Image (cartoon, rainbow, N blue to C red; front, side):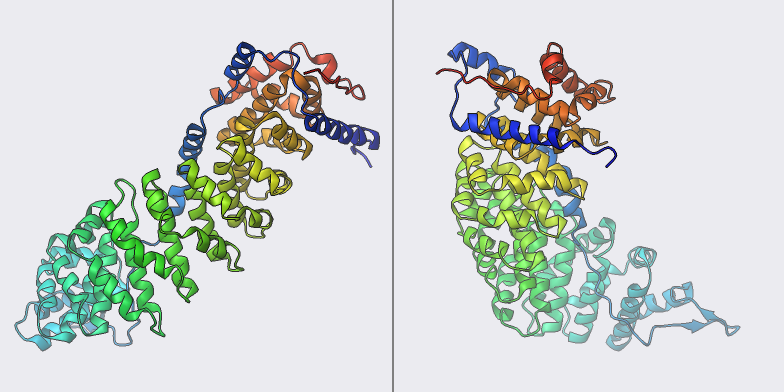
Length: 542
């Protein structure tokens, strides 16, 4: 076929990979291996053989963009909408139908809410709540500007249960709007009333209080902490115990959504005392029979572990790792994804945390997860592997011994989603930065160079830098033994021309990395790099 690679050339390339791997297995030492030469060589690495904690920190820094985007996709505020068949309308003096929010209608509602008659008040609050379900934020602004919020809050403390219910529902929906709307409810003093209503004997009222508290806490760290200081956690835990086995799980899910909002936001994160108070309940709910509940709890754990090492340790010490490993093995994609995200966050922590994950046996599942039909699961798995691979060579060896390299290289080569390839190339780069020469040669035998060279055409500058780092690390670690052979393989994979072109890239990190490779490894290597069929290695003595 036109443009196909000759069979003899393919055979030659395969032979070179296998020959290289065989030599690595024989543990061939470099000709000279003095401490000074080793130190000089290590200093030349792009990552300078960085400490595993620094490699992981750099990986986390780059992943913030991905995690932030995912976090912002979560629904922190919700409007409780019921479609009403009796929405208010009216007519003017000429018999023309007025809009739902015409000045005449609004004036009438304001008069009703301010009335001293409870029946009229209830009609006004109901009308306002129904209109708010249909209108945009402008009507919420009108309610606030009319000075009605404090009056509606007063109804929360009254003895009229129906008026309590409607007022709580209305305020919960006002708080679901913008930060200005949420603050209007909180600043007017609604929180103590809502905390009290959490213990109402009427489920419909306590549920509206849960909804309102969740919306207020979801606004940001300031209001989240304000809600926590108001004493919300104890009554929420009591509600969970009350409705733990309720056949209709909607209420329990709303409570868990509230807990999620108490754990979200990172600047600053919730206090240690809050986390410690919540952890026993969260750990217990991780074993709940409702998969949606378990998924939400996993998501909370992913929030709590998306933090500092000491907070990760708080979570790990609860003993949730075996349960996470079990959830990763379920056939439920939603459960698998959130469990993987939590595992991925845990392995950004201390070395002992990573070791606990490795010892849990979860790596046995990672091969199939890297081949999963769901790209999000592929990405989360590759991300976890990249953080595991940012550790010492023992951690990298665990990845290799579980036969994950072929699946990872395949993901690098055939990933259909750019973010999936991005995670895969980070995993490879971390292995080349912290791995031994035998481990790097294992990557070479798996055919990692070809997809790395293909990635050199991406428009993502961050991916280009990481890919060039990986290639540089490979060349440096094999420099004393197999430099010519690897340079030849890079050229046969089409990498040299692409690296040459990247010297002109607009991103200075990309251009400098490309220039460094060409100057160090190819200026005096033109003959050997193009000598197809002359790929030979002479074994070196110890």
